[in-house]
Image (tube, rainbow, N blue to C red; front, side):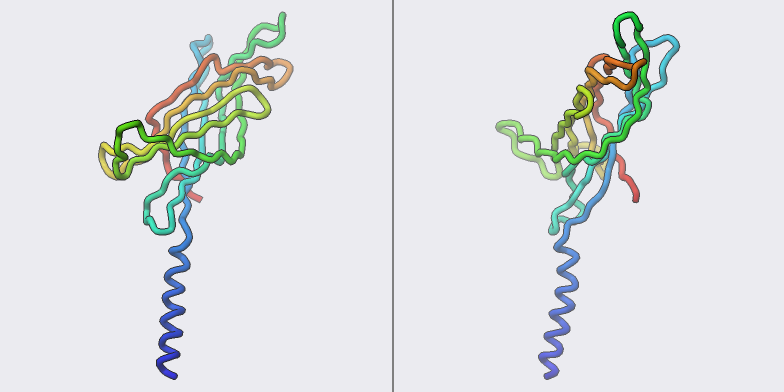
Amino acid sequence: MKRALAIGILSLFALALIVPCAQGATRIREVRVPIDASPTSPPTPPGTLTLRFVFKNKPRTKNKFTPRQLIRIDFSNVPLLCMNEPGQGTSRLLFTRTLDVAVKLTKAPQPAGKTPKPGRYAFRFSYTFTDFTGTVRGTIDKPNRGKKPRAPRSQGTLSITDLDANPGHTNCTSNGLKQWGGLPLTGVSG
């Protein structure tokens, strides 16, 4: 009887240790991209494009988090040039909007003839906006050089080609591709 009780207690203890390990953990990270306007008079302060990502690990890999999903796109005072209707002249719009999205990241293929290096990865994302004409796309990668711990970094492009905000701000554009590269991703608490 004592043996059966001891086996039962050990089984419950082992199950209690296994169950939390079976689930992967999640971390939220974001990149803040400064978006400058082309030279204007008077000068327009730069706005910010913030992209928020979910990083997860596999149940058996401790502290090895990789990007899985883009979950939020946040525009904060991003300067756009608006052409407006004929006869109305041009204007500036400081675009502010937050979009909750669910964009799955895909693993970038390894270059031909190259062997993957341990600890390095690259994931790509692309999102086409639904209520105006534009895209945001990019890559999150983790370098294998530099000081440890190596933080993931982001590079990408933002292009807005036609956004109508209100009667005084129509046919707005980001005035070409806005590009960034090598910006670190930071952890988000809560």
